[in-house]
Image (cartoon, rainbow, N blue to C red; front, side, top):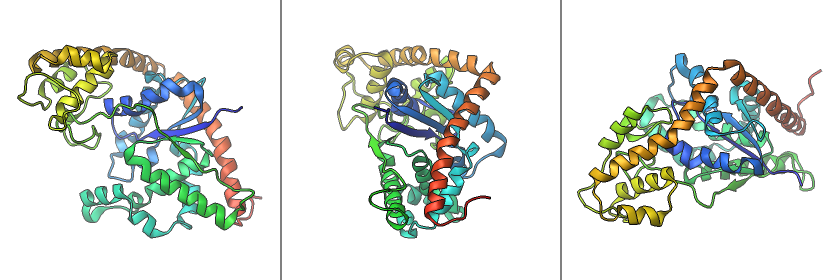
Length: 336
């Protein structure tokens, strides 16, 4: 039986943080041998909000290098840059022409981000769920790793595929495969270091809210030392009145590789002054091999370029075939 195909990606909007790694990339690494994987750096998504063109390319290659540093294996997974496969943008336009506007206006993330940008909000922010649908459907993906904040986007992707199949295909021979969500049994939901009720995010204006994968030991120590806690002695999981406590204990559990029961027993009678050094030590130790591998990859630019070139060629072969099928079904003339 052929392996099921998985598609996912990360925006190059700055350094990856522990939330990206523990919530997504670590899961990709652990299960990559089970699937046929396509992991892209979604640089086209990065320009849906104001961006700095001077650092976009550097950030893009940095994320690709971090994929490798975190353990993504080119033998099991194709790594490529989204904008290097032009089929993404062409299929997005074709999808735009069959996607009702009200489907996009109802997207929760658009409403939240548009509120922040005010009158300067671009059409791309409204339209990026269609680009995401093109990303997924181009590769006829069977499975898409999703978190709670992405479920609505995958539902839209399926709706677009159903609409195109109905209008231009047939029940016996659909043009696009309907992807299913890939929901892990247990994924670490990492919250902000400054607010235990919000997810750790690259968009948070405070650098103290997150630990980046490339942070130095001194930076990690500083951020953990200043992270939000409470005045209660004795640390416990799952207390709804202590979200920061639950978040930091969960981080310690995952980074140290201990069981929940072991961490609960170790920390039930200690205070924050004793706990923070433990968490700092665990975070530094967990990130050290990733940082060492990253430096190795970046020191060999030819290696990274070869991986991305090979990934682009493999991705484009599938993407171009899907695009050709959609163009043909919609009635476009074939290139002469």
